[in-house]
Image (cartoon, rainbow, N blue to C red; front, side, top):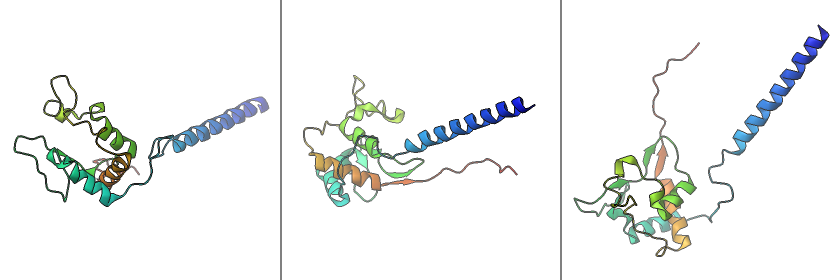
Length: 155
């Protein structure tokens, strides 16, 4: 009987260690920015000015800034209520490599005949500081809103 209790105790100790390791790994990976990827802090007002100067509002609409696209122009909304915050890295990637991830709803109108994004390549036009400021501005425009669930509480 003693051997069975020792074995059971060892298993529960191993299980506890395993659980703590899993929790540690999960918590360490919950960083909003990607590891090894850090840009300097940006300025929200400078980012808003960059958004206007580069005429991002010809194709994108954002609350508080007039959309200047034509009636046949692509109008991709930015900001607003979203179920999860857009990470800094995701927003940087969307600006410097817009073809990386295109929403299904914009695949036809937002891409050219080869499937690449119609968004102009701003890598040659924008400074790193302008990119940082623009992304900082865009991040402030997203608000997390958790969708309601229809689950009943368990008692």
